[in-house]
Length: 444
Image (cartoon, rainbow, N blue to C red; front, side, top):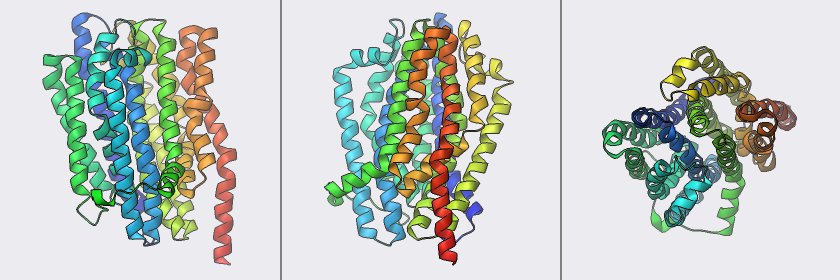
């Protein structure tokens, strides 16, 4: 990790993360595709709309999984770089245990208040029955999803991203395989059952994989909650948590802005979100491959390798975004028509094209946020992490629809992206200059 050529190492570390993220994005899109068959039978877009509504809740679960995973994982990578194996293993078990318990608490509370929760997430009265059926099974799966995401990230920070890919990948593929079998029989509940089975299987596989290949194994006796460990988890995980939780709030507010215009815009934006997620997931995977390289080399004092890996990750990610735009912009009508019908197609085409253009230039701030986490610059990392869907998107989604109606709601995300691209430079440039000075001092 600290000696191999940077670009081949980055590609090797990114590949499993990209595959696991891509599989997750594709199975989310597959849920929408197979659920759309229900809408074709009923002549509406309510079932697909329910998937979009519940997506904001799944982002909350991801927020906790990522917080515990990134927080404990950043600490683990630094300690492994220093060869402090015992502390690293205790942190791995504690982070995963806390993640599971948090998911369990969310599960119990959500099942008690199922209907109010579905309404709070932005369900219309026509979407509510479908949202209720789907959400029930997502809640049951919550502790397994949170813990699986945490273990996946911990494995990645240990340099064993391939194991994480296998764990999440098998569950996601199983989910996709069950969708066409269960949805025709159980409706939207079938999509929920498929997700529950997939998440539970992923949890089981990841737990077993921690006992192989030199990984930090999940031995319950090592579970040890201390103030210092909680502080480390929060320090390294709050930027990820903030990014995800703010994203969930932003999606809920978007649903509220769209529900004024009926089910069609909610369904359209649900599909657009899944399409852009496929592209973004590749970039996030590259960033996740970069993070252990950054953390271990920073811990080992090899700052030149940190900078080299960062710039290469940005270039690779920019290329991915450019390819996504070249495919998505001209073929937007054909893509949307596979998932929704009627007026939702036109809404989705405009929204997809609006979002793909600024994404081409977004790699610097997305990768930069991840690097700041590894460097321990938690305040800057948090600001950059929450800017896209918090500091900028939330005010925009509250203001633009008042002046421009539905079009304002569709433009909120791309305008937010443009602002974040500009914000990244004053936050990142001082950090990269500090690292460059450190390299110069070392060389001298």
